[in-house]
Image (cartoon, rainbow, N blue to C red):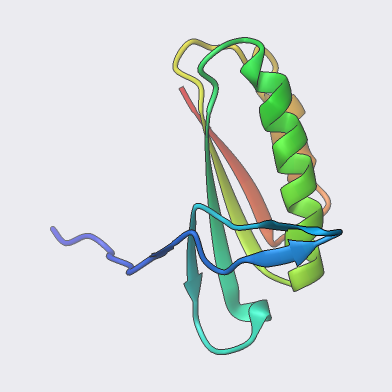
Length: 105
């Protein structure tokens, strides 16, 4: 059995937006255009209160990444089940084929 392997860059590129900058946790650029970027964001629902912050962060990142024409994978680790309605967070990306939210419990 063999597994797929990808070389990912950590915390690049730096994306300026509205006077601040953001950067994905991991990224992979296929060629030189932003349209070929894959951005990966990792979030940890450590507490119940953290869930609101995660939703806010994902919403802002989705907007920024859409402006770049990139693809994005958002992984939310929720070992305690604080996301009672998983659909709430996965619905953030329902209007695009380029983004996906994966909740891991």
